Length: 117
Image 1 (cartoon, rainbow, N blue to C red):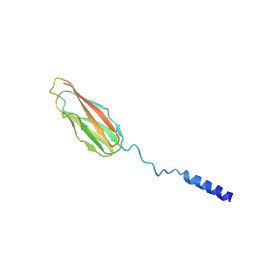
Image 2: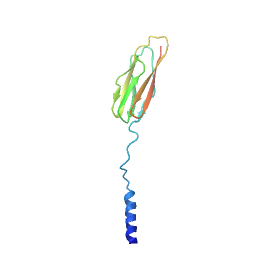
Image 3: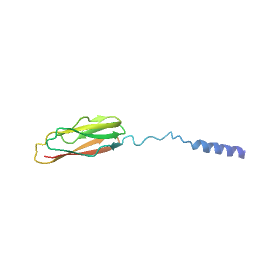
Image 4: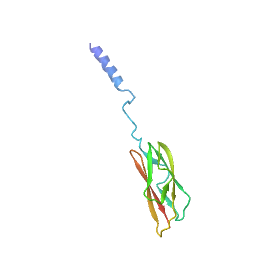
């Protein structure tokens, strides 16, 4: 009888030490990894666009807090992404700043846009 209990204990031990983890889930599914810088600078009369590149762990959205700072796309799916940023000509006498915010379900990243005069 003791021998049977010993064998059952060993079998239970081996079964509970399985390498498979059936209950785990990826926790980085909403991450954002910037593959380009987090700052863009434009001349006051700039007309060419500049790009922001990143990898998103899930669906993402992007927005600018300034009407003069325009994004080529404002949403996308999981994976590598590129947004082209263009700016209107700066008709003021001051340098201006905008913030582009990229968000997923679990993360956000900001890119600062500066435009000279």
